[in-house]
Image 1: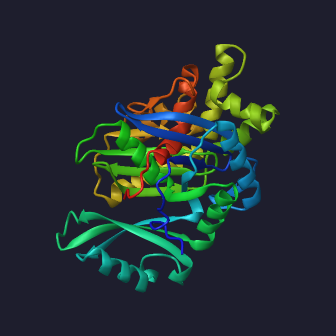
Image 2: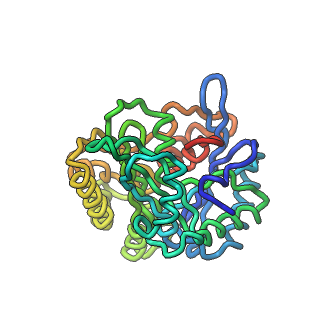
Length: 359
């Protein structure tokens, strides 16, 4: 039986595999006496329709693309760390009376309907993590529950194993970003930061306090909506629109200024949803002070986006650097490509940093 926690097995070198709706990204991290090193990183495109809002719809095609990715990367590791997001996973914070882990697991299983939108827990893989005592009531504790339908987990599992690989850890996008953050940044015990990963079709929001997630949200809106708008306006291919979105166009500064204004208009629905999510967090958690907002994902590179969000959220906002303390293998990775790798590699690096037995 697959379980989000109990998939852990084996001792082979682990490889991070970020399965997005528009691309696959591989990150192989090795540990050295000088710390973590990104040994290999590779991205290949994924045809539209294989992943829809986090749900796998074509396992055979995904398996073929994963095979191609590993063949092209030269990676020898077979133990895969991948993750779920969007409609395929639910992450919920719940407050319980103080109890041990065994009692809590039994309670969640027996009374799942109170906490999770599933009628039958036999159809669900779930896990939880005790965050600690509730801030307002020491007789209670805060718990994060993660749940996914077995059918969704098994579809990804089967696609990866069909590619000749083994799933060692099934993570969650938001938690993988937390792993990446912890490996690269210093933080105080009560310091709150937000990591926002703008993927092609899903945006992940993870609020972290003292290195631990206290609020997560995914919504099914991402960079593809901006690309589609540019494609329609400029009558270009999807690939060309993707390039325009980040690099601009050949022309005058005025032309590019007008283009950037147009791109930010297309990004408005995403920014508005991010703002609503942060406002909800602030209202729910008593208006906690947010020190910093970090952006990742391909669309995070849009000129002016960080500034726009900083103004809206009234918080300093910048691109995250998943290689701030993680080194890289100069023989396998071109230093000239690091600037383009950093924003898109955050999730894959977070997955590649996972170890068997992590919570």
